[in-house]
Image 1: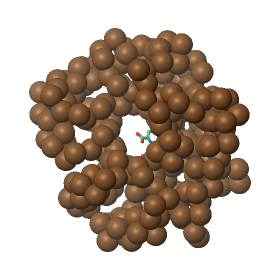
Image 2 (image 1 turned 30 degrees about the horizontal axis):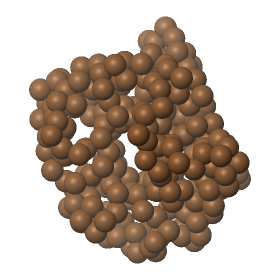
Image 3 (image 1 turned 180 degrees about the horizontal axis):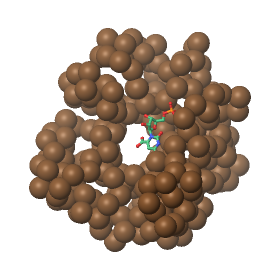
Image 4 (image 1 turned 30 degrees about the vertical axis):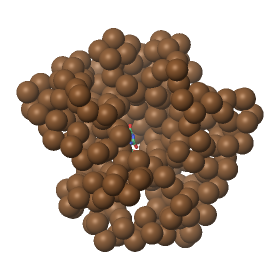
Amino acid sequence: MPTEIAPRDRLIVALDLPGVAEAEAMITRLGDAVTFYKIGMELTYAGGLGLAERLAADGKQVFMDLKLHDIPNTVERATRQIARLGARFLTVHGFSQSMTAALAGAAGSPLELLAVTVMTSYDDADLAAAGYAMGVKELVARRAVQAKQIGIHGLILSPEETQLVRPLVGPDMQLVTPGIRPAGSDVGDQKRIMTPALAIVGGADRLVVGRPVTGAADPAAAAESIVADIASALALVGKTNRT
Ligand SMILES: O=C(O)c1cc(=O)[nH]c(=O)n1[C@@H]1O[C@H](COP(=O)(O)O)[C@@H](O)[C@H]1O
């Protein structure tokens, strides 16, 4: 059965910062406002693996966003190493070989895999330029179904596709959406975006938010505001208890 997720645990803050000292300072500023952190490529390449282990040991939930994609042997062995950190989530690009290999590497560990469908900075024109003969929605749907068939635990997609994808994958896959922009915040390089409340109303289980929190004058207040939006949106749709 799906378990309850508190509104606060639905906010994942992306620690896209240049070093461990900056990340630790941000974590201190955020305090109890944030329970779930994402460590991506920038911080990992700046020595962030130890921080991931410390955060997990301190009781925070950790999402390693390393977007694995390589030959199956490499993906499987890399996943096995990452599983030792104590993180909850790891991203893998939504290609069948990589998803299958990552699942093998995570076997026997509590690590849950999230398949990246189509980056939220991409639109139909970007896919066409990369040689794809289908648009964003079609490719997200195709990769979502493949991920489900392979046994992947959840998906990274934009909030624009959650309503399309949920019926394709059933109730148990976690739909995790970056591309979150509170009203009035800078869009930056994102192309498929939505506010926190609308993303939750549309069926996102968890929201990944970086710059609107870490770049705010008061990051803890920005996080609390998003958590409040999530709680209101959940109340609106009467959905407090599903994953
Ligand atoms: O895998 C991700 O987390 C991810 C996938 C995607 O399609 N788009 C996307 O923005 N992300 C990540 O989500 C975060 C979004 O950050 P902001 O745009 O600053 O809120 C960044 O850490 C991205 O690496």
